[in-house]
Figure 1 (cartoon, one colour):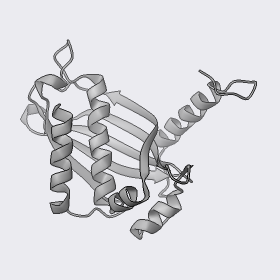
Figure 2 (cartoon, one colour):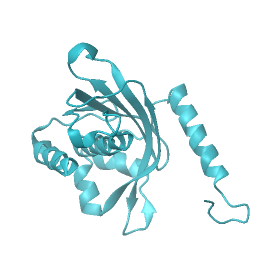
Figure 3 (tube, rainbow, N blue to C red):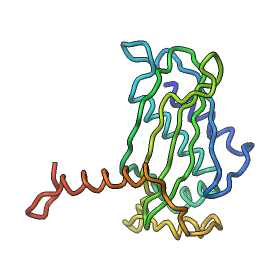
Length: 191
């Protein structure tokens, strides 16, 4: 239930949050680890990180000016791949900041970095976890992925991706390898 409350807060506060420039804008959302975020080890559940990351990407979509086009055109955000590196545990009631930023894009996929950073206490500013995410917008009516150039045109931004760094290249290479490994040699989709 608390994710629904966080989502509602995000949507209600969006009109008062500043617009972010593309691609340099960074969405910053501050949260506190709540009891229902915890696992049996009494730190934030690994799956909760992924759910909170959804909120950061939604905030980014709205604040770069793409939210109306997504709603109006029936586009659906789709996750293609994610890699999370956990560094330090987030414990009950600790405050943290989720920073979400675009690091590059390809024809139909956007590459996003998301970092969980301690917001207060003795670990202020330390990174708890960092993730790389590859996603796209799917046009349900046209049954196609929305080209990034079309997204950029919608928000009045350049369609030229900034160069990606070595860690993002490694992430993309791993994604390609997994995609290829999952293909059925007879032409169907693999497991």
